Image (cartoon, rainbow, N blue to C red):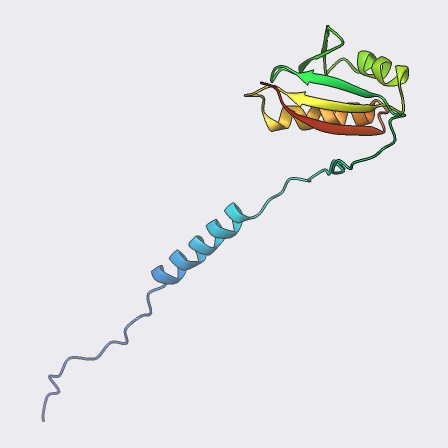
Length: 131
């Protein structure tokens, strides 16, 4: 009787580690590249040259990131909705031009634009950067 001394060949198992690595990398990529915030849009129109000088231009100077702005020599806070509504009610058809001081964040400027719109201002514009 002859003995079979050759080793038994085992089937090699397929390693799932590289597959799991790829799945986690894809998961990480899609999580970082997706956005779950709802975006709100603020309508801004580009300035147009007009011969019509019937509308007044009120210049608001945004001074700080805390929402402080100046108008006609007085200081206001953009969180004060009563004061904003009083400004808008004085001249509802006026153009409110916002001048932004250097170093003020864009989000603060957008918040002031949004607050003016909520207060009832029909025409809101950006005037530029203060020196």
